[in-house]
Length: 298
Image (cartoon, rainbow, N blue to C red):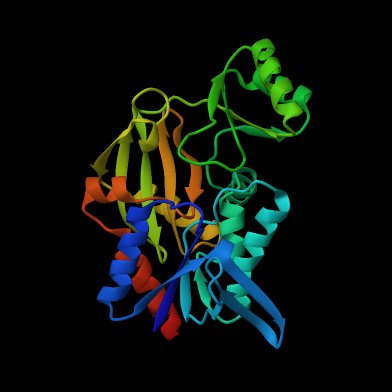
């Protein structure tokens, strides 16, 4: 059986994770196929057919039973973003089982879209106000107090900053308005020295790490130290429900323990797991590949 790994050709994202997936696929006597979303040809006429040609190489038809969606790359234009999303979606229409499902990935990788579904499912999310009106954002800082402002699409804590004074915030919002950026303003919550990353695959939490913060951000890319953590019933239940609410097959759920209880910050549908693996000794790639193979047998 051929199993694809979807990623961009132009930039190598999380090479350790891709290597783990390729090894897991090979160990199970299947063949990993690298599917570069920026090198695909979607041919329409006799149904939906997918071809891949690297540079000037003659395109070869892509025929895989299943595929694991890792990343769609860096987007410089909305049409490029739209193309890559629906090029990956074309693989599903051509008959491949893609994990995570492309449209679920699309929602989960957008902070606004995913937070709305989490709240709708009754899951705890910090008070948040999202708008394209900078005066709404100004009022949000005035009403929420200390806040964190995040890009709708981003990862690893980059581009996330903390604000408290509404008038200083207004200068930031004015700049973001000139860049045509909406505002995702979330009340800052005091975490207990960091937060948890709970990894869920196939409706089951396979493990958790505690990311001990170096400062107020608890992303490993920002200097946080991953440590093994014990799962309790509430953490596990929140993580599993969050992944299910977004229609995902696997994901990394970021949860903070506060004086008010647990809060879910986000669900990462293509999380990097090298820090998690080092802290816990658990390799999510094996669980993801096994889950995909089981679903292909159904």
